[in-house]
Structure formats: C-alpha cells, structure tokens
Length: 506
Image (tube, rainbow, N blue to C red; front, side, top):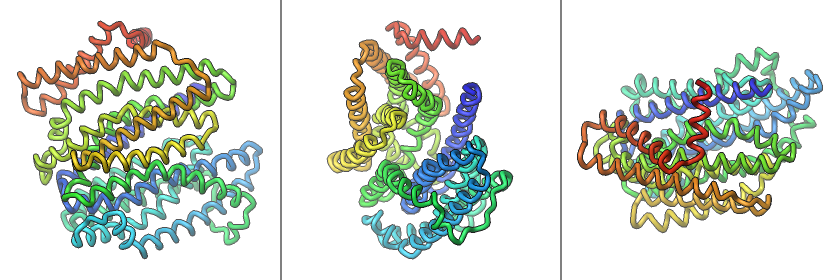
C-alpha cells in the first residue's frame, strides 16, 4: 500500500511538473506575441476570476464530496453513490451556470472594480476578454466535481493530466487564433482550455457507471445540506489565500501599462523552481504527517517538520540567490523576443527580484499549513491567511512609492515570510517543541554557502559575460557546484545525508 501511495505521489508530481512547464511555455508564447502591454494587462485582469475559481473550487468540492463518497464506497452502497453523484452533478450544473450568467451580466462592474486605474480603452478590452472567458466558470465547477469522483476511485492521472491539456489548447490558440482575433483569440483559447479539461474527464466518469442524468430534486438529498454547510467555510478559507491575486492587479492597474503583465511574468518565473522543489516535498509529506498525528508519534512529527523546513531552506536559499544574480539574463533568455522588449525585461526583473525574496516564506508557509491540516486544525491557517492579506496590503502601499510594481512583489514576499513565522511560532508553543540547535546551524550554513555562491557569480559576471544562451545554463551549473562545495566545506550534515542516500541507491 505504501509503495502504491508513493508511486501515485511521484506520478502526480511528474505530471504536475509537465503541466507547470507547459504553463511556462504558454507564457513564453504570450510574451512573444504581445509583450508586456495594455493588451496583456487587460488579459491578466480578465483571467484573475477564472484562475481564482480554478485554484479554489475543485479543492473545496473535493473536501466535502470525497469523504461522503468514500463512506458509501466503504459500505458497498452503490446506489447511494450514484444518487449522491446525480444530486451533486445537478447542483454543480445549475449553480455554476447561474454564477457564469451573473458574472457575464455584471462583467463591466466586476472588471471596473478590479482595475480602477485602467483607461477607458483598456477597461473596454478587459471587459470583452472577460466575457469570452466567463463560460470557464461553469467548466471549472464540472472539473471540480469530476476530478473528485475520479480521485475517490484512486484515479489520479487523468485529473492531473487535464492541466497539460489545458495548456496545450491555450498554446494552440496563440498559434492559430491570435493571428486572426488578436488578444481575443487568447481569451477564447483560455475558455476552450477549461472546456477541454472538463471534456477529458467525462469518459472516465461514465466508465465508472455514473449517469449524467439530472436530479430535479437534488436540493432534497439528505447529504446535500450537510455538505453545503461545510463547503462554504472551506471555500471562504481557500479564497482568502487567493485574494492577493486581485489586490496586486488592483494596485498595479493604477500604474503605467505593462506593470500587471510584469508582475505576472515575474511570479511565473519564480514559481517554476517552487513547483519543482515544493511539489516534490509536500505531496508525499502530508500523508506521512497525518499518520504520525493519528499514531501520536509527536517526536517523529517534529523531526519530520524540522527536516522538511531544513530541506526547503537548503534548496530555496541558493535558488533565491541565483535569481537575484541572474534574473535579468534569465528573463532575457526566456522572454525577450518578438513584442517583448528590453524594457519589458527590466520591468519583469523588477518584479522577480522582490518575489524571489519570499520564496522560502511561501514554501514554508505551505508546508506548515499542511502540518495544521494534519493536526485537523483549519482555523489557524485561515486566521493567519487574513493577517497575511493585511500585511500584504500594508507592505505594498509602503513600498510602491519607492519600487513601483516591485513594491507589490516585496509586500507579498514579506507577508509570506511573516505568515510562515507566525505559523511556526504558534505550532511550537502549542506542541511545546524545543527546537534543535542543529536546525539553527543549518540555516547559518545554508545562508553562508548561498552568499558565497552569489558573491562568486557576481564576480564572474564582471569578468566573463558571454551571450545569455551560454551564460544562464553555465552559471546555473557553476552556482550549483559552488553551493554544494561550500556546504561540503562547512560540513553540513544534511548534505552528507542526501549524498549518502544517492550513492547507496547506486
């Protein structure tokens, strides 16, 4: 069973990474075609609501639907499974269709609230693009339900692979639709991407003998009320963590054109290493933490949490250093072609520079949130999430006069760092943990090694500056070797532990 779970986790991580990489490629196509412009600002404003739905709704549906479905499956109550599915299918079909119609009806007001600083031309374009994307909200509700059904049956590949299909459709729309429809072709492709994702899930659901016939009396189903009562607070809690998406667009809309796009591109670059490293850690870690909690193995829980925090630090602190030193060249290599100019590179690096500061804070916050979930405490992460929003707004307003859109990124990074610290301190006090000194020394060694690596790379850039096509991969390799060498010299135990495991496998 453990082997099966590990295999599933590895598969999910691998497919997720492919999806993230394709999402990154999608942004490369967007930058080549449109750069960082009024058009892309309007697109990312219009995309904010569908993407927030996509990040929040499926998780909230699975949180209330899967436990009920698993209960029926465990008792072999096949008719109850089908009845619950029909009720949920009808409810999702109706409610999310009404939501889509409501947003279409009120689209102008919604976009005006999100982007109060837009010119009339930019605002009109954003409203048009949003109207193209509105049907996505209905498809996202279907994706959430169908993914939950398949996950309840331990079928993870197709729901995860849907992100790959989504990105491929959007990329295809950039190639085939934008030459004729312009940025509206990208908006149409975005909607078709969600539609393709939903369509991909239909056959696997039908294969498991679930019917797509509607239940006109779904609201009378005995399970629906209880699920609804749990769904709303879960949705609110998850939504709080996504409010920053709207806040950064709200603030950046009052700046010059291209700032919203620069923030989006910079965050995308920062998210790529985050997705690789954090995904690899957190996917298999959560079941392990839950097991320790259920068995009351509190010492092993603490050791695992400390080791997870330590690993994230050792991986992300040099990544942060690398982005600080090579960010401009990396953006130039990835994006600077077509309509994406050298000025756009500078703007994007201005966001990436400050986003990268918060990498460890974001990763640590996510890891510690999973610890609270393993402890069956959902209230504390929500409260810290609310505090995070206020810190983010306050920090952004404080730094915008000095760094423009970079101030928004810096506010987000500092808020994530403080949120991680709050979660960590509260956890230590509640569990009455005494932090091992070795973790403190690990932070020091990792920081010194990353600083040494960064210093050498800065010096190398001053004496050897080839084309970015050679510079970026060469300096990444050199930086990695230097970082490991410095950790070796500093005799970091976790480095030797990881190297020992690698060589034992061989």
